[in-house]
Image (cartoon, protein in one colour):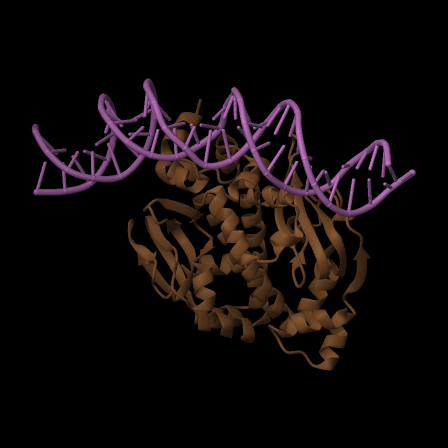
Length: 187
Length: 187
DNA sequence: AATCCAGTGTGACCTACCTCACACTAAGCG
DNA sequence: CGCTTAGTGTGAGGTAGGTCACACTGGATT
């Protein structure tokens, strides 16, 4: 379990055994079943999560009860309601399991400690955050410039495999189109 | 000029005079006139920019020649085509002046040096990047859930003042609606 | 076997927004 | 001063995509 995390971190910064031993004390492991929630709207957000296995969705439910998927999180991804996490305010989104999942949990205090005590880890998180930011900007561009069909094709390219694992209803909620429209695109 | 940068950084991390002296050696100043470009599509992106004064737009031009505004950058904002900057590849977007602007330029090498030599600055950039990521996610949510009119009102709230400084045509390109539709929303 | 329900397809109609076209104003410039 | 150009408003008609309704399949539950 933890070795997956180490492998993931070492893609960015090398760590000695001692360093990783220190790192690992900051995390805890947890398992969730399909349909369980890691975060529910209104919760105080305790953790950022690293996904070891399984598949999550980060969801915002609007006033009319419709679900919108901000992000999927699969193996090797970090996810949380980061806005609520960093400011320790209540979640506006929920984080749910689409498949059974194993995750590694990082409380905010531990995150700060880790960054302070091991500059390498600050650098690691900076890299991850930067890439996340760039990815989010590409998604914005996609929403601004592309039609539903084009966005669908972009997702096929960027996340091959995801489409197989996710019901089309959820994919539609990620693309920002109705289930019915997505169903008609394949043509 | 540079004192604006110092003030900005010290909102996140305090610096001694010596530390700021070191920091400041990593940056250069530059001025641009309205309609000039800091980055053009196809350029190798040399700098990330801190906006001291003025107003910029980060623009993607699609195949049909239509402009889409990924982001505005006003006083105290950092901007660049970050994707191209971090990977030192060619820009897919351009960064243009809407008003005369003074900016502070940070080459990628200096950025890395600065983070390595002064952990405080790594922490500063991590904070900025995180907040940028959160902001981008909110924009995604806005595009997924809200109508053109709602998005317009959200921008009014989040960036009061911006609407006065920016022609409606550009605001429309930011909101993802046509100029004409935006014009009809005021009702 | 009978039932339930998640997931999906599809037809019919509706609407938010786009595009095209034209008009008007205010500002910069020879 | 007249001319151009940027910025904006507004009408008319088109379309991508939404909503509602119903049907079908396959896996899970009893």
